[in-house]
Image 1 (tube, rainbow, N blue to C red):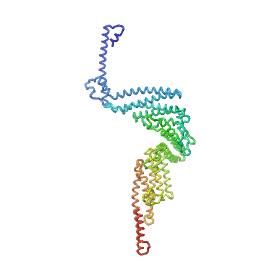
Image 2 (image 1 turned 180 degrees about the vertical axis):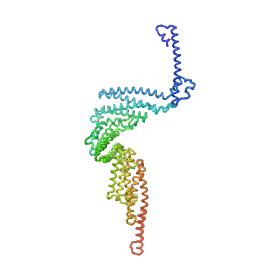
Image 3 (image 1 turned 60 degrees about the vertical axis):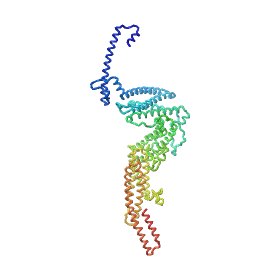
Length: 633
């Protein structure tokens, strides 16, 4: 190289200069070769030390014990197989891409802030480019992760097995959230400036029903200003694509480190509901004036239901926006808008309870809890029907053990199931239930039979279950069924078990004590007392069998109620007393048959023999057979 450079020069070097220069280069080359050997030994020893400490040294390529060095080429080949170096190299390249993406986003956001509204459409493309880049990076790392599964002879496994580092993932997630806030701000500005009628006006109808023919504001915007509507849809689609990338990032990385789930509410729902949130907080929040009344939480719930129906109509006009964004199989826009309103109601309802706690000078809190629970039960059913109209029959099914009955559908009930309210509410419910049970038993006709037995009852007709059932038993059984139906809306299984165990134990214990007292309340001696005791035992036996068959037995085979302690306990107790009272009834009926039918038969036969009776032997036999049939019955 030196000779060529010198030959191209304007003068020719002297031979002595060339010899001296080549000699100096030769000495320098010799020193470089020595340095190379030293570096080979140093690298080989260091790599051997690291490999030994990690327990992953390859015996075939490790240095010998006598200090023989591994060739530099073999060492390079060995290092080339290291998975750690591959991932370090990938992370470095990835960090470079991220830094460039960061600068692009920062530049785009800076430029967007200084633009006029009419110029934002062009700059919106910068956001789209950044979002597309994020999506491409996520997809590429997802493919890398799949490809790594096919790599064999893994020398050193990656910690956690993740495709991207925690720092890289955190950076990407933060950029997604930053871009989300900017796009949501832009979407809110579009709604404010381009749609004069937004947000939709919510009117609470007297009948509580909304006219389904109501015109959609966004649908009207599509006809009036297609350009603005298209820009609105484009922004929403970009938010959906960004959310899909965010969800993929959470799935790619370690979810334990992120501390959350990848699936959440649809992002662009919040900008659509911003104005509604301000209005409902102003009117029904703690500082809402006359509309914030502790005894009228139904005003808030009714307004929320009407708003949900209005926004559901708006959501139907946007249903096609998310098609092709990757989240169309996860979210439904009308349902997400309804859920967004439910979230606001869940935040406002505790304010009523907090105000009642501060002003509870006359014991208002228990009454408010009971009234709120009653309203929540009603509106949870209405909101569930609004979210899934096809399941209306399942939500309103009166038999909790029916195969079509829906469970765990409530949204508002979660407010009362919170730790700070659940205990107080349960005490209020049990206190109210005690008074209600006493009122049922103290009614003058509490033990009156609901329906008298007929021939169709004995033949297994549809009213057979009500044969000889006292009114109080049927009412208590219906009351327990109501509580079970109420608990169907609970999302928390443990709270449902505690709730049913408290109210169920109170009802079943009171009923069991009353039935046991009636069975043992008559003196069995004497014909009259024995007849009354037969009637009382028969009624109690039919009652306890009715409760066991209608509630306790089905509850043991239902996954939602099989763990309720009081149901399991009284199911055994009722079966035991059915047998016990049946034996007692047989003895009483046998005595009754011996003392009445047989004595009467003997007396009739004596009169016939003495020719003192006009009754024929056939009539006597028929009367005896009827008495015997009563015994069998």
